[in-house]
Length: 86
Image (cartoon, rainbow, N blue to C red; front, side, top):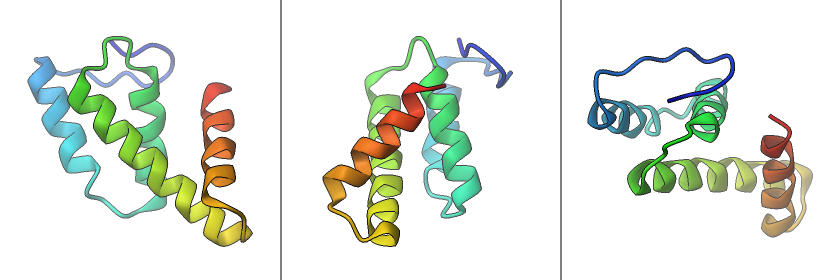
């Protein structure tokens, strides 16, 4: 189940995993951030979904660190802090 304000419905957990696999291939920052947020809110996230979530987080953290010209670890810390505020 997804809590909060993203009412995505799936027929099965497999359908949800397949959805996020496809969504994780999209390079649009808005879509990536939406997928990070929705995956963060999934209460019963499985290992495959967690891998997708971590990969998306790492990509955004790296992008942020390149833009801000900071260490990638600091970029990732910032992204995690922002996500934890959801």
